[in-house]
Image (cartoon, rainbow, N blue to C red; front, top):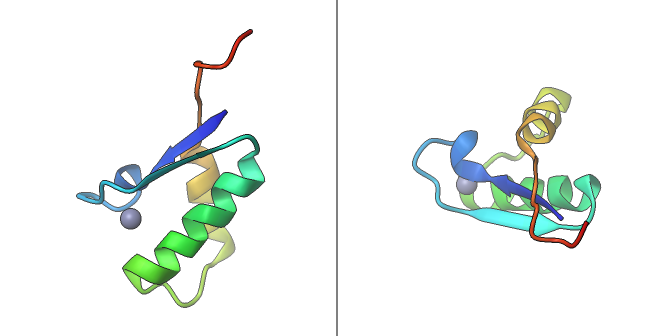
Length: 62
Ligand SMILES: [Zn+2]
Protein backbone atom coordinates (compact mmCIF):
# COMPACT_ATOMS: atom_id res chain seq x y z
CA UNK A 1 0.00 0.00 0.00
CA UNK A 2 1.02 3.58 -0.62
CA UNK A 3 0.06 6.44 1.62
CA UNK A 4 0.07 10.20 1.41
CA UNK A 5 -0.46 12.76 4.15
CA UNK A 6 -1.65 16.13 2.96
CA UNK A 7 -0.03 17.79 5.97
CA UNK A 8 3.38 17.19 4.36
CA UNK A 9 2.27 19.46 1.52
CA UNK A 10 -0.27 21.75 3.19
CA UNK A 11 0.82 22.42 6.77
CA UNK A 12 -1.97 21.89 9.27
CA UNK A 13 -4.11 19.62 7.07
CA UNK A 14 -4.89 16.25 8.64
CA UNK A 15 -6.24 14.58 5.51
CA UNK A 16 -4.53 11.43 4.37
CA UNK A 17 -5.17 8.61 1.94
CA UNK A 18 -3.95 5.13 1.14
CA UNK A 19 -4.14 3.01 -2.01
CA UNK A 20 -2.48 0.14 -3.85
CA UNK A 21 -1.01 2.28 -6.60
CA UNK A 22 0.83 5.60 -6.71
CA UNK A 23 -1.53 6.73 -9.45
CA UNK A 24 -4.58 6.16 -7.26
CA UNK A 25 -3.01 8.04 -4.36
CA UNK A 26 -2.21 10.94 -6.68
CA UNK A 27 -5.75 10.89 -8.09
CA UNK A 28 -7.31 11.04 -4.62
CA UNK A 29 -4.89 13.71 -3.45
CA UNK A 30 -5.73 15.90 -6.44
CA UNK A 31 -9.43 15.43 -5.76
CA UNK A 32 -8.84 16.52 -2.16
CA UNK A 33 -6.75 19.54 -3.17
CA UNK A 34 -9.53 20.64 -5.51
CA UNK A 35 -12.34 20.08 -3.03
CA UNK A 36 -10.74 21.25 0.21
CA UNK A 37 -7.94 23.61 -0.78
CA UNK A 38 -9.50 25.34 -3.78
CA UNK A 39 -6.76 24.26 -6.19
CA UNK A 40 -8.60 24.65 -9.49
CA UNK A 41 -5.51 24.15 -11.58
CA UNK A 42 -3.30 21.22 -10.70
CA UNK A 43 0.13 21.91 -12.18
CA UNK A 44 2.61 19.16 -13.07
CA UNK A 45 4.83 20.48 -10.27
CA UNK A 46 2.01 19.79 -7.83
CA UNK A 47 1.76 16.20 -9.04
CA UNK A 48 5.53 15.85 -8.56
CA UNK A 49 5.20 17.24 -5.05
CA UNK A 50 2.53 14.68 -4.24
CA UNK A 51 4.54 11.81 -5.72
CA UNK A 52 7.64 12.85 -3.79
CA UNK A 53 5.63 12.56 -0.55
CA UNK A 54 4.03 9.17 -1.17
CA UNK A 55 5.30 6.65 1.30
CA UNK A 56 5.30 2.88 1.31
CA UNK A 57 2.94 1.50 3.91
CA UNK A 58 4.57 -1.60 5.36
CA UNK A 59 1.48 -3.21 6.85
CA UNK A 60 1.14 -5.52 3.84
CA UNK A 61 2.67 -8.98 4.01
CA UNK A 62 6.08 -9.20 2.42
ZN1 LIG B 1 -5.33 18.84 2.61
